[in-house]
Length: 163
Image 1 (cartoon, rainbow, N blue to C red):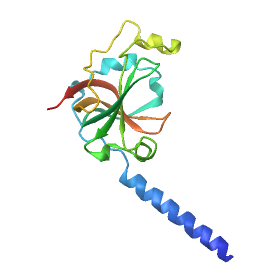
Image 2 (cartoon, helix red, strand yellow):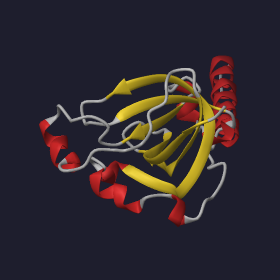
Image 3 (cartoon, helix red, strand yellow):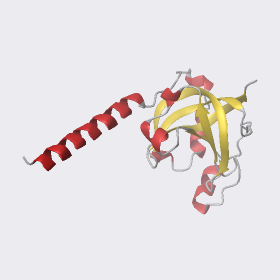
């Protein structure tokens, strides 16, 4: 094996080890397991394209600071949360999501996407919407969004603004 090949091999092994350790550090774990009764399972019938979501924990609560709010074309309100407990983040949240947890309040506004309208028909979320900068406790299902690869709370059952 040539010197160049050995250097490339060492770099590949080091890179693989780095990503392996990063994946262990940011595996994405629900901070708390709550009884199923604390989350509204009926919300799932209004989740658009629910097959893309893999439930990790049916009901959990996450505390953190609201960084941004973004209305989506599917009617959901996307909240970017800076969580107090970073163990809730996986590696994709850290790298692609800039160390934030995505939180989705379903059917918060009428969908502009025609395909999503059936998910929100005859339903409008009653979840309290926080402001940017608010410190909150968010309760809902902890899932992996396979379209993006990150962990998120989706659907949200409740948001409490903390003092």
